Image (cartoon, rainbow, N blue to C red):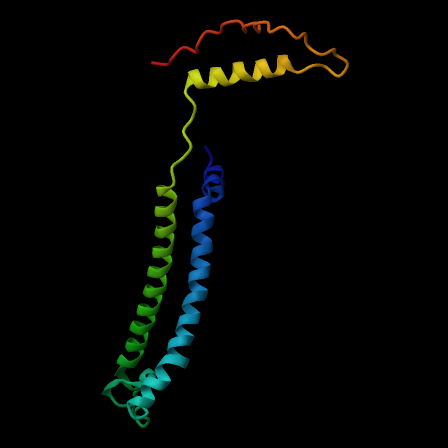
Amino acid sequence: MSVFKEFREFIARGNVIDLAVGIIIGGAFGAIVKSLVDQVIMPPIGLLLNGVDFAHLEIVLQPADAANKIEKVAIGYGGFINACIQFVIVAAAVFLLVKAVNTLRRQQAAEPEPEAPTPSEALLTEIRDLLKHQAKPGPAAAPAPAKAAAPKAAPARKAPAKKA
């Protein structure tokens, strides 16, 4: 089998397409959550903490020196705090989504599935349908005689052989 044919079959599977859609939606959702945290949640928290902007919180290890062309070296822990809050929001949203899906699956599992008819039931149903079909008068047929005659029995059929 050629590599191209294998790749085409791989891509054509529903799981790969579903995964691609999930990644694209997840990326868009991540951007929404980042905006929510950076522009909606963190400003009021910073205001409560006397105007602290978490995005710019850092520990400076080496200050910048323009004369010696040395750039500032710092640990930006404020950005890390923002990322942790974003993670908690995404995790909560995924948890709620998985919980909803699991609830739906449990409800579907609780519903009893209709049982398939046994071979004898299927045969009896077929005989009943044949008898109904034979009993229907044609469009120009005369009404059936008044005496009650026993209906002709359908020829006996052998039950299908059971597979071992």
